[in-house]
Image (cartoon, rainbow, N blue to C red; front, side, top):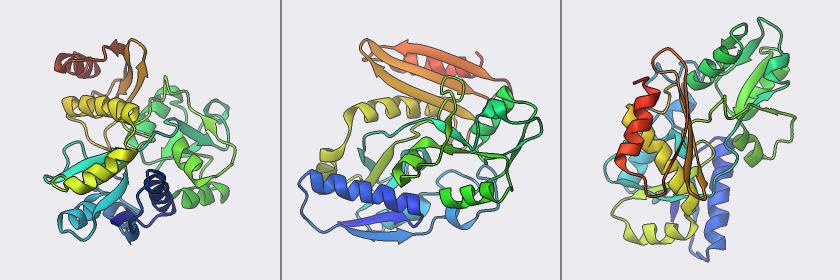
Length: 286
C-alpha cells in the first residue's frame, strides 16, 4: 500500500499513527510512505483565505490518489474540503485527539493591551477579538516548531495552536487551553482521516478496521452543518459535536455575518436533515 502524506513533521507523525494502527489491526502488507509538498506548505506568505484555501493542503495528494500514484493519503480532516473531489472517499477516521485550541506562553486574559498574537486562522482571530478586542492578531504560518521559534524570538507575545498537534508531536511545553465553549474548535479539529479511491473496495475494507465509529459520527455532523452553511475550511466558524447518552451535543459559533452567534443544541441520535438545517439557520442569525 502506497501511503501519501505531506512532508511536515506533524503530517509524518500522523502517518506514523496510521501505520501503527494498520499494524495493530493485523495488516501485514507493505506500507510505503511517500512525502509530498502541498500548496499550503509552499506558500507561507499568503493568508489561507486569500490563496483559495479550499484544498490548499490536500489537492496534490488528491491528484496523486486519482492518478493511482498512491493508494491512500493521510490528512487532518479539517483540511479536507466538504465537497470532496469526485472519485475519492474517506475510508477511515481515526480516534479523535484533543479538540481544543491552546495559547502559549500565557493565558489570554493575562496578556497586556496591544499584545501581538500570532495566528492566521479567521476563526481564531474572530474569537480572540470577541474576548480581547484590545489585542492585535498578526499573521503566522509555518509548522509547529517554526511558530514556536518565532514566539521565542519575540516576534509575537503569544501564539495559538491546536492542542492535538502538540499532543501528537510530544511537545511538553506549557500551553493554556482556550475554553472550548467560547473558543469553539474548527469542524473536525483533532481528527485524522484516511482518503482513498471510492471504487477501491479492497482498500476500503482494510481501512474499515481502523475507523472510529464515534469520531466519524461526530465529525460527520460537524461537516454537514458546514455544508448547510455554505462554509469552507477557512470560514470563521467553530463547530464541535460530542456524543451523549440521549443524542449529540452540538456547540457552534459563527462570525460569518460579522456578528458573533453562539449556539448549543442537542439533536437526537437519529437526527434528520431538518435538524442540521435548523442549526445552520441559527448560525446565520435567522
